[in-house]
Length: 312
Image (tube, rainbow, N blue to C red; front, side, top):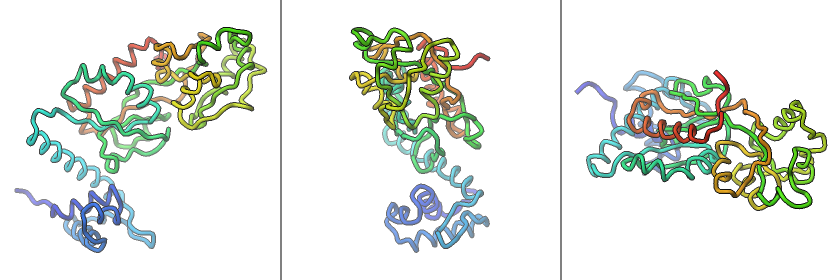
């Protein structure tokens, strides 16, 4: 067999990448000194400085970051091979690292259709709340991710596919469309509290500006007394309960509309500048599992019947 670094040193390196030195020591049930010794052994074996050292501790070098990705992929492949060997009937296992909003309000309501089409694949979902942020496959143990941002170049040397933009429009409980304060025109939004998601890079202000440019009377509609939330799902649940009028974000809001729990009083909508991206390591992009998930996801987005991508 060709030369390989010691497995013990590689395990310590991979664990440090996920948990740090203290966490790796706890994970592997050894001392911090033992972890640091194994890291020195590995650096001596490969002849490359994998870490920079300072008073604040260890930081992966550029070479170390690249090597950690490859080591982690190798361990994941070994783990998956062993799992299949031990239980060949268990099928494939995908781990998705997704924005909370996209996972909760787009993927989960449609997940039964994924399993109907792919009964041999188990999808584990790990949800994040941050709109922006680095993808840390080594730390999360995921092999695919969904993020929202503006430019594909922000993902470094990963395989990236654009999924969709958001389309924004007001939504409310159906009962707000009737009665003395019924919402019939955009001007009527001034009669109700607006619900605002504070984590979103775009929202009500963009919709109101576009509505005004389109000739709608929204001069009296203000966010001064908006009721604010830091998760999209919370603002939509509040809208279902009649707390106020939310800014619907397709594709997340569509299942609420289909179920009749929310209504969209106007046809006017705006397309966001930011978009959702599907990300994985380049080596994983041709795998059967990734393609099955990607194709299902795109089919579900296409089935909405909304234009969620700008014109070509």
